Image (cartoon, rainbow, N blue to C red):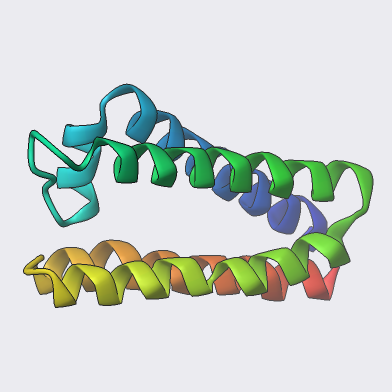
Length: 123
């Protein structure tokens, strides 16, 4: 019972981060607004693309670890990757974003990623 839940949550999180990255590449300004810190229409494009590439790459690496190495490697990956939404939360708070987005989106994402790591370690 625990294995399908652990693997399923990890797959969903990996696909979700890849989707967010794709959104930053294809529709960067709406994605930035959803992130919690709207981007200027001129000048921020490179940084938005960097975030997009980072997130797509993380999603692919997570899926590859799960498929080719196993749950324990994915658990360690998730544990390290939980630092990213925590950092994103701080970025949103320091750059004028709302607390609702910082905690409701980024902090809650970090909690779910840590839960995923715990489930994968338990498999």
